[in-house]
Length: 454
Image: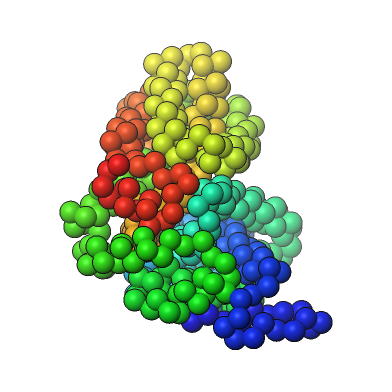
């Protein structure tokens, strides 16, 4: 249900049912953008915050190596569960309640981390927080997309990826500040509660998605909300989609109607993140295998900043060059870069240039992970589809991260890089045949374009 926005004390409130003022409309869009950007940032903050804290946690809680691995992997396991779960809940019960509940889990989990007394408690809490991270992927960007206009939607959604990187970097800075403090890891991990508290306050006044209301047949409520806030929605296209989409839930993702979108969203996302996370996680090992171990730390810093530059570039050009051009050519180029390093591992210039191009272009295309998945599914399946694609992308990342060290030990860096190049080629081929061009299309028409393969 729509709620009347809070106004300044020196302004009269808008009467129920009356169009909102331009200032109120801008305020709603600003709140929604901030609530989503901060939510994406807190995802990166929670995942990044464990890095510098792990040593102190291990000493204080006497963690075994198995417990260290479980604590570190807990959020990734939770994402696999939370993406599909929260996605389905948001399609079934509405965007607004799930959007708020998800952030409340972050808030409670952040505080509880401060009081843990053993590794099991920390694992369980971070597992639940990982479920919330998966939920944030499934609900945050889709809700923002359903309020966004056709033009500029891609840039707006792609900017969420920048928020993730900034959140990760901020967690590293905060962790460094607490490294010399006794029990500082507790304050470091619990500090995400402050971010979550701000986000909960922002999300409390956001109304339901008009597109979701249309998908539920609640046209009068939806049109009142559209008129009140001047939301750009093709009502006829949304209603046509509702009439055509007669299934919901996970089974619908694998129906003839939606299988194309499900395969594309899952494969392209997994193909992008598998080599990136695998190589990034074991960067030192990869560099040592290439006989460049002395430069690994400096290279890791370059790796991180190049990724930020790449995702920023992707955000800036996504509307100008279109979705397909930002996705398909970089897939082929980055595959060639890894293959070139694999067949010419003795050349330092080739290694440096090859990795720089790979990192930059891979991160640029990764901006589309916040855009494409929610454009290729209709409103009634949007968060379910995005949640499933999120889970599949994490399966890809986990497989790559798990297999890479074994591949290095048994077959060497050259083989590992060729496998990474092969994964990128798979992403390129699938995208070549299945990726629709959705730039400047209304969400309902974008989903139809994806479904029909136009």
